[in-house]
Length: 308
Image 1 (cartoon, rainbow, N blue to C red):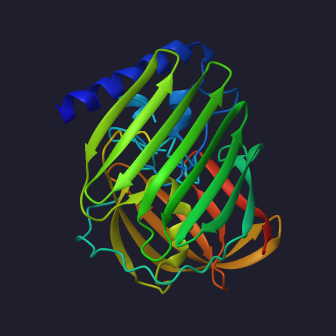
Image 2: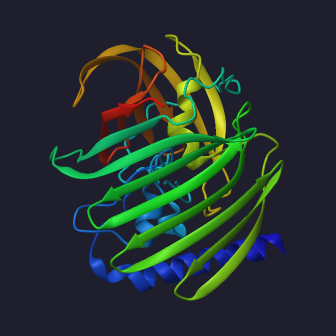
């Protein structure tokens, strides 16, 4: 029964994509973003951070954005998803589960990113992430705009383990809107998606330990940042399709990155999905801001960082 409900959700998203498909944009891929000229709701979903390239938008749609989800395979991080996957090299040995440290961010922190088209370097949008806290829970709010597409979400998670608890997401495009609500618990999640054709709900079975795709660009800052570190984790997109997104992260060394704030020294982190890869640069100095993010189609550059 659960599989059937999930299939209905996929059809509903596909229907939304079809209803929104007259814009002529190509599907993007995380916390990521839609192509110039506007993207469909499905395409946006597929463009979110932390998500690989074949996205729910293709098999059935799906941040960065951002920051950041993937598809079947999928892709939207933070919610970005990869729009155009980059080929990966030969398979590497499996990595152990990631061992996150304490959160380097503090409630009230706000970061803003300029988003550029990777092929033209033309500015196409902006993303803003705000970290917060409600009692014992951490929160992450994001507003991501790329061309005429706007993706906003509010995510709740355990402040110590980073396990997600709930998410509300709204994707708005000239061709149509999609609203998603997700409730997470150990071993599963409930996803409710509302589009032009109505509301559908799906119950999803998940592994004991997983993280929300839309928090990927935040929690990567809590990795053990040292050259040679490798770890694996499982992401779940807000729309629940695909149910899980396996990711391997590897810290390959330090580089100096040019940003609107000037040159910043950062750790280079490669995130490898089943059929694509993304690159993130995390500041060497605390609080280890994400200073650059390349999802394969768009490049995010830190343009403002506000402490509480």
